[in-house]
Amino acid sequence: MKVDIFCRVIDNYGDAGVCYRLGKELIGRYDDIYIRIITDNIEPFKLLTGINNSPIITSKMEISDRYCGLGDDIEPGDVIIEAFGCDIPLEYEDKIDNVKTWINLEYMTCEEWGQEYHLKKSINSKGIEKYFYVPGIGEGLGGLIFNGNEERSRKILQKDLITGVIFTYENDFTEFIGDLEKVPIKIKLQIFGEKSKKSFREYFGAKKINYDGKRIVFGNIIVEFIENVVQQEFDDYIKNADFCIIRGEDSFSRAVIYGKPFIWDIYKQEKNIHFEKLDGFIKKAEKYFDNKKTFEKYRNMMYNYNCVCTEKREVKTNYSDICISYLEYSEAAGKMMDDVRNNYNLVENIYNLIKRSE
Amino acid sequence: MKIAQEVSVGNTIKIGNDVFIIQKAQFNKSGRNSAMMKFKMKNLISGATSETVFKASDKMDDVRLDRRKMKFMYETGGAYSFQDQETWDQVDLTGDDLGDALNYLQEEMEIDVIFYEERAVGVELDNTVNREIIYTEPGIRGDTTGRVLKTAKIDTGFEVQVPLFCEIGDKIRIDTRTGEYMDRINK
Image (tube, rainbow over all chains, first blue to last red; front, side):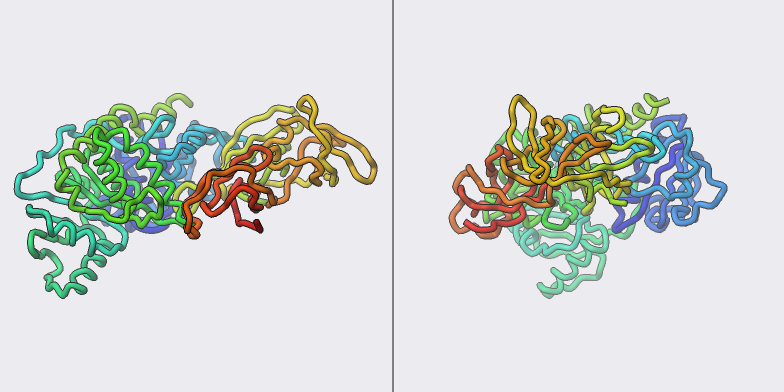
């Protein structure tokens, strides 16, 4: 079964990361799938796969940048997935007569309204039905992308070292590091992505800290700048970390699947719409916390980090709590991980949707 | 041609050979400043209603049907009566025909009534309406940022999220396409 995933790379690595992961997990789990990712920018895919070719071809997947010039020879697949609402090129759409399943894979949300759109149908002038698929955690939502065979056991916290993965948009980390410096334990921060690294360089500059660009130790804090890694290696870093500050949807799903306490650096939108999206997740996360006070501290950290203005946010936040109350955050993260792994497998759901339409 | 985001209650669109009138329109922002729409629409040919979703950027073939400015007179037994102020003709529409327009309907309100093959099939609201708040909880003193919201009810019972500084008796402007508060007009 040929599954065409259309992917326009708007910014950062999220578009490519999600599409590649979806394709990879579909072919990893099911034998009857061949994936074609049709994109307008193949460069992020080269970084994610570690394959520096164009097109990128493996035994069950092909990634090409034909989005802007499909050519006459392309025949539509059996299944079409428009990622993040990207439009299908007209020359492809004109050829669609007999598609089995057409899916608009939307942005992830944990907000209640998402279930009013999830698996609802849309129609077009050709009379072909299309499903809207809304990823997310919660009843009536489409789940997250994962294989299902990932190792369930989680890393045991070391007594003398806590490791955090930092992969964020640009931010001022002064308050965050200031709080961590007061923790009576070594903390290793592994920094990924140019925006996070730029933010840390600015912090070092402001504090007049000399660094060699790769690793630096000051007080109890160890900072390591990690060079670009392929998707699987990045997954391993998150799996082996104790906590994360992550951005976007793909890293969010990794932090959840591996049961890591995390702060979500959410994509900023106009008119602060992202505050509602963040709240949508926080509301869903509450049920995994046994201790209400710990949940409130977690919520506070999320609001504070994302500069959310709300009457629920206390003025003072202490990021060191993620280390001090680590076991409680980890327990909540573990419950979320189990719930998602048991009930919200997007890959399985999409495959079942495709099979249902055959 | 419109995009889905520009389509509102009372608009008519053509998909294939079918003409639909929009009875309810729900707008939700998804990720990266994009959005989705959910329409409850009635097929004017078959009479069937359906709920359908679209990307806010999906192109819609909008169809302009006949419309007449009429005044909403009253409702009895689920029938909403509208009268043409020039010809004194009266037509009735059901609550389903009116859809989301019911959220803003007031007696004596002038509104465009849409006709298909000389039959009244719906109404089209202006993009904004001004309404008075009849109930809301008191807000926190001093909050003028407008970023924290609370629920306010207007006279139809429709609830709008408004800034904390809004009070009972305030007149507010509401975007009828999204149901969102726009601004406070005067106290």
